Length: 296
Image (cartoon, rainbow, N blue to C red; front, side, top):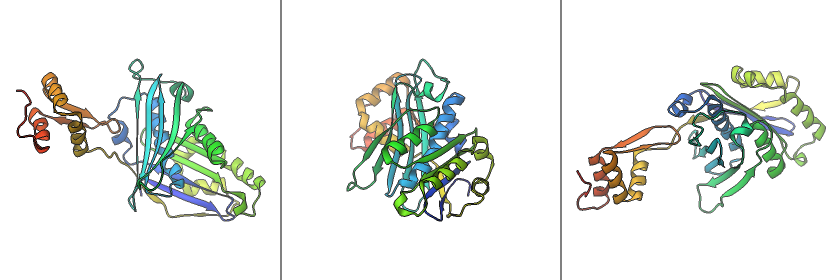
């Protein structure tokens, strides 16, 4: 299995966690967009985080991790969508300020002066949407997410994220409620200290089972069946067509008059959908127009 989320749990129920490895589809998702190495790495880390966050997803639907700001990065989005037995679908993107198309710098530089939020969106209308703010604290996205779990969920959590050109990896270790175990807070601290020695290069280079043996050689834990993960954008020509129809015939006509065609690029995967003059006309014929009024 190329892309997988591998959960594990300690036998005394003091903590659980997971590893995520993603090697398939990274270039297809990110290489069509022009990102600086720092921004590309941040998007990769955000996408690696999404399967780890999905451990808390007890419904079919979507998790959004979204940043909105006014400086280097104006928008960063990572999403995980869960539907039935299908692989967990992951995608991510960033939109940069026009003045800084190849923005670089530290985590704090890239996400300064903005809001980072985590949103849970159930597919069912009977369940409410939830949103929580993630503090932009520390020197990495890992530290920011650790702060979210500590403050919003009251669950001490250790997270490690790593991204290379063609591989995304993540690790999560999270303490479970103490009333569900006979283990102590001191034992959790022991596990946390062991896990904190994990380095990004190790995460990228070593298989999860080997890392668990290295980190917790003297501990009792169980590894569960890996779950498939896919880097997959949900964009489609059908969806783009519906978007153009929603813009209205007059606006689409104007785009065709100015440019000779309509071209829409997906913000996530960078795929370009091109509509010729006749393609655009057909959209509105299909919508019930007696004839296209697109000018030749």
